[in-house]
Length: 292
Picture 1: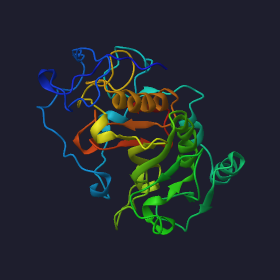
Picture 2: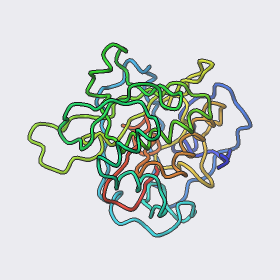
Picture 3: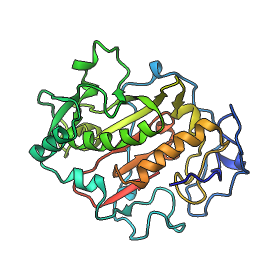
Picture 4: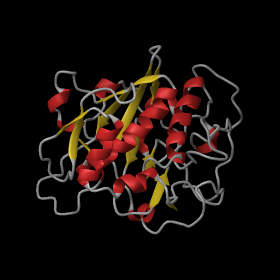
């Protein structure tokens, strides 16, 4: 899928949320669809490095955003930003979510994904840990290397691991060698009685920084160049200003969304708590996907 250079509004009055670093063929911002959510006033997110990210960022989906999806195509211009749509029958996210534990682990082994079983973890059906690079990409969190083999944040359900393996193929095409996340598993709070999902079930990853072979870093916080309520992928979507880094990180994200590797793809366009990361999630028991 080719990334359109058309830019999304950064905030009201079309003011960009970020300053350009290396302008490339930038176009004028486009007017957001009337169906899009109202844009907030311009407020810069704090310019923090990965080391100061919160260990447990707030991630929330409202019922209206995960209940009955439209039957319209995800590429339809009539679909408002953040509207769930029916996934295609062959969507990887649906396939992985439906696997039982034994079948999932067998698929990981067949692909040669390096992993070790993780100890029993509350809410996680098939917990594992990555034990090496995935498609030449080192997927890891913020803690020092010595702590990662026992870190709770590095536990991942097998089904999300399969989606990450697919995603790593996209990353490798962009010479990405490191994918730095905030967390995958976040243990449910004591007394939790609901059905574990998302981070509670180790079925979501919060991705913040991609490091390329030449040392270039693509940071969600600094390089996304979007605006809350604006369209994330497809016709009329794109970063503003359209820097080289912004175009590439948008292309990576939208390629994964187009391939339907994850049921839920949330970006800084969704809300302020997602200003510094992509929330990528495999959701069990649903037939839709959401990109925002």
